[in-house]
Image 1: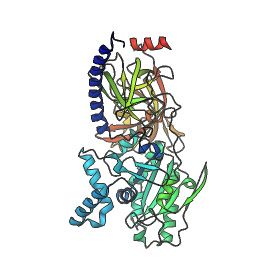
Image 2: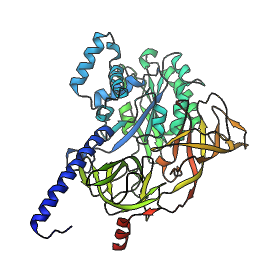
Image 3: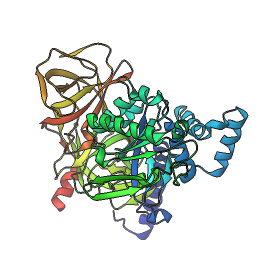
Image 4: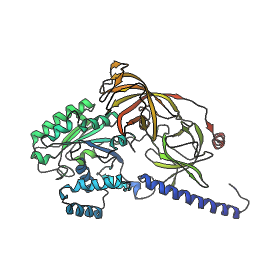
Amino acid sequence: MHAGGGGGVGTLDAVWQGRWACWLEAMNIFFTAMETVADPRLASPLAHRPPQVNVVVIGHVDSGKSTTTGHLIYKCGGIDKRTVEKFEKEAAELGKGSFKYAWVLDKLKAERERGITIDIALWKFETPKYMVTVIDAPGHRDFIKNMITGTSQADCAILIIAGGTGEFEAGISKDGQTREHALLAFTLGVRQLIVAVNKMDTTKYSEDRFNEIIKETSNFIKKVGYNPKTVAFVPISGWHGDNMIEPTTQMPWYKGWEKETKSGKSTGKTLLDAIDAIEPPSRPTDKPLRLPLQDVYKIGGIGTVPVGRVETGVIKPGMIVTFAPSNVTTEVKSVEMHHEQLPEGLPGDNVGFNVKNVSVKDIRRGNVASDSKNDPAMEAASFNAQVIVMNHPGQIGNGYAPVLDCHTAHIACKFSEILEKIDRRTGKSVETAPKFIKSGDAAMVKMIPTKPMCVESFNEYPPLGRFAVRDMRQTVAVGVIKSVDKTAKGGKTTKAAEKAAKKK
């Protein structure tokens, strides 16, 4: 924009700066609410931060997940000393001294559930190699939904097993949560697993008990789909701290854990060692862009600002993006994160980006931004998915139309045809065109969205290819999308996009 004289430019700049300040303020409010994690590429102490891994902690309700997670965060993590002292004092006053680690977590969880935003750093801890984020605190009521639509995909699941007499058996029984959580993790593509056998102090640190549990658990995880050879089994006490961070002296018989994966053999003693031996995830920058929108803001003087997390690919200023299913194409003017303009947004980044000539009515939460020149996202006319029924009180037949939570979309989809019932582990067909499916069943289902929706196959774009089926205020089933029948509808291309395309 060129004005006649220097003065004109100055005035325009002042107006523009004022508007920009407004936008930054709005972004500030948004990002505080989003609890985003700082960006490693900004020039700051974070520039040298360790690689990130995300873990999810699973296991039966009394296995000691909170105590174990609390212990790690407490010893290696982001809870400042003042908070710890405050919690310890409260715990002691309430006679909960013996629960101090779990208590720390419960306090954080309670505040989180009341909608008080907790600094997400509290859910982090550091190992010698990684910065570890605990994706969801165990026991959270939306745990299953969060794991699926998850703010991020877990790189590894830590399965906590209670070693106490009777406790282990209860946790792993048919109706135990352990089975459901492990199956869920595997179905959602979490391929790395650590098993921590907790409460070893209650078994008098017995080698026999540990071996018995390893044997049973190996069989159990094999049924789910994991290969026990690739899993580290660690005997711990989350409460006393045995083998959590330092090797214990209580189990002289324990020589350490060993696992073998494609990248070789690794060994260690503690749970921290096992977390450190997680294989680093590859972040999908080389895939085409997929960015599900969390929100769309209208900011005076700046225009429309969609906000969301880059799941795959890269978003850059100057890029011509297409939004699906609304099929609007426009140019990206700028990309922002944490009040800094970015040259590009990468997978995992929560970004806001300014688009030209697009009204807030044109795009909304649940839409997906993609690169118009590289496999642009499209509306799904229908899709086939492998669905696992978790806890539905009755039977599910053709025509059932619950709400699906898939990435940021929340849309009712019809089970138009149950194609076949399958063996959960092998994926082989066991019955063609069953009339009904019920809890515990897995099936291939053809689904039709009741409103325009954009989804992808799990193989190509994992975060857009897994979903939770919600009904009766709970997650009744989970699914992984195998194939999508896409529809190309005539859409709207803005002048800005046409102009930018001509330039190139």
